[in-house]
Image 1 (cartoon, rainbow, N blue to C red):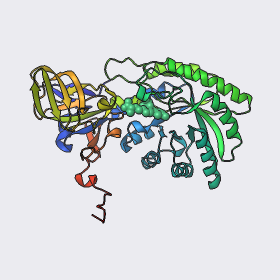
Image 2 (image 1 turned 180 degrees about the vertical axis):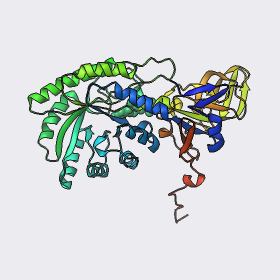
Image 3 (image 1 turned 30 degrees about the vertical axis):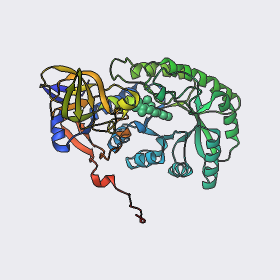
Image 4 (image 1 turned 135 degrees about the vertical axis):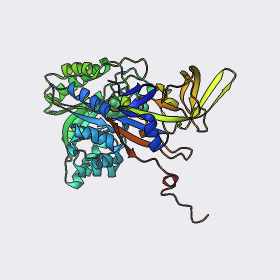
Length: 417
Ligand code: LLP
């Protein structure tokens, strides 16, 4: 069920018209559907109903606390990549025992914070990191639960910027080295080896690369067992794609079936780090048309949202569906929908057939719940936008629009000026 639908001419989020939201919050605004977040989480969870598992939502996709709380209420945990994410997750009420910590560049103070919090495990991405975690844990009189993030050298067939499981990527430890590192980890005083981890990329539209990677890791798991290293957790990472346009990603149930089959008999507790799959299609960005102009055969629609609010089109040339807030335009037009930022890369849709938007018309960018607000910035001194969550016929502002005062927070004019 799509919760962003027209009722008459008006586009709704669940039972609330977008124009009613904008009347209260102003524009632009990110709007999330609680029903969609819930449905996506449950679909993912149900896909693994037969196997012991925990969903550690990859909060980099959308770290807004109300989104986190929605998943925590359903039993989820988080995959974090910074101390800041840990702070947010704790504020939103995460169970520390459902936190896994990934990322190639963990700082000492972040490791210490995570150890003091008592997270489930660190997904270790380098030899030096393993040593450092052991040192810090020992100093604190603790043991750090760890998994090694193994780079299986499998091509996920996705955008190069979001491919992470190939040998030349900065992520993880190669299979060959990982065996040695597990053996070394056994002798480190601050380390408790509890798992194995992989994450091969994002927006995957096939299950095979996941299964191929699991098969490679299974060989390792068997070898480790032979050396007396028994692992409890198998972290399969995130990466399951969604439909933005014409993609046909597997359903969570198909993905689940194959992964359960591939991991059967291992007797391990599965962990997953889905990000985009849970939130991508649960959020939209709503903006307002400022001006339109045409020259030669080129049409531009200037809106009040830009690449600072939704960076994905500028960064990856990615596609976000465009829908009118109210369908009262006189036909369609091929146009570039562009923002106010002083860069040519500042477009949200390019050469797209869209409604003939007029001044003040609302424009909705679909599938913007993942890596939308989370990647937004205040470039060009544009305050970051508001966020709203809708549940049925109610909505609440879950993040106030930043003010210009927020823009200068923490800034000081040097005393010698
Ligand atoms: N686990 C790890 C270790 C990750 O690095 C990522 C994403 C995930 C899980 C979640 O992946 P997902 O399920 O969302 O595919 N900004 C890009 C995507 C970057 C993904 C980074 N890592 C975009 O807008 O497409």
